[in-house]
Length: 105
Image (cartoon, rainbow, N blue to C red; front, side):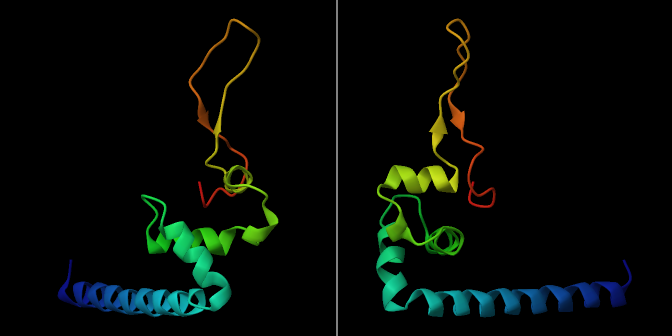
């Protein structure tokens, strides 16, 4: 690679890093509103759910108050396990449901 190409790639990577930081700060600012803060904190209390995951879930799912249970929210998002059933003799592993938001899965 030529020195000019390396320099252009480094400039582009630096710009994209700044933009990612700016967008993350914007998302953090939006999620600190009183209405979303409680939902975000509740999601982050789940083991394995970090701030970026909680923000993605809040951005993709409809209003959390619309679901009667956590199972309904998981089914809407897509990661709910679904048992394979086909007759009585065929048994396969339980897999993730393909229903729901593909980006959240």
